[in-house]
Each structure stands twice: as C-alpha cells, then as structure tokens.
Image (cartoon, rainbow, N blue to C red; front, side, top):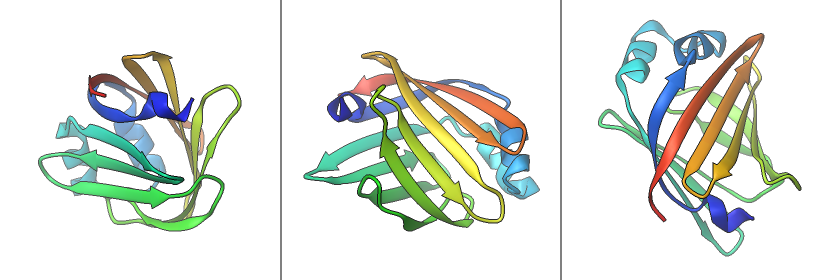
Length: 135
C-alpha cells in the first residue's frame, strides 16, 4: 500500500486552507504566501525511510521519517512540532503534529491518480486534492 503514495503530486483544489493555517497559528504573511502557492508534493521511500517534500516557488519543506517514530519537524512556515507518521490498515497515511496547536493531516488515495489531504486543527478542517504528475 505504501508504494501507491510514491511519486509527484500537484495541488488541484484547496478548501478552507487559510482557516486551517489560522488555527495552527501561522502568521499573516505566511498565510498569504500559502494561499498563493500551488505546491507539488513529492513522496519517496528508501528502505524504511520516507521523504515527503512540499515544493513551491517560495520554499521547499521536507520531512524525513520512519513510520511510527516521533521526530522534530520544522513546518513550511517555520513552526517546530513533534511529528509521527503512521500507515493505517485502511491505507491512510496519518501525520500527527504536536506543538503549540495539535494538528492531524490525513492523506488518502481516492484512486491511483488522486490524493486527498485532510488537515484538521482545533475545530477547523481543510481539504486539499492533489493529482499525480509523476509516479
């Protein structure tokens, strides 16, 4: 199941992302940049080490991790959080972030070319849909 996530994905649609960024305490300027960005998401796996990169014209963020192991992540907007990724039996890749504000990001494949990313913090939910461009 993990191999189905691998590849390059491009953001197609985004709902309520500004409200999500407010909920996780992203500053005004970074929210404005985030609203303008149409990121690519690169997901790769080398042995048991995953690399997830968010790539925009403004910045590239990278998380390198092993499943079920907590690590310190610096988010694209500079927040420091403790993060754990898990791959669920139902095929969802779950990213739990613990910091000033807790957040859960769930990535799920609708089909081989559609990745849905649901971001939840406090009582705010954002949905972002990516299409496969390479993989």
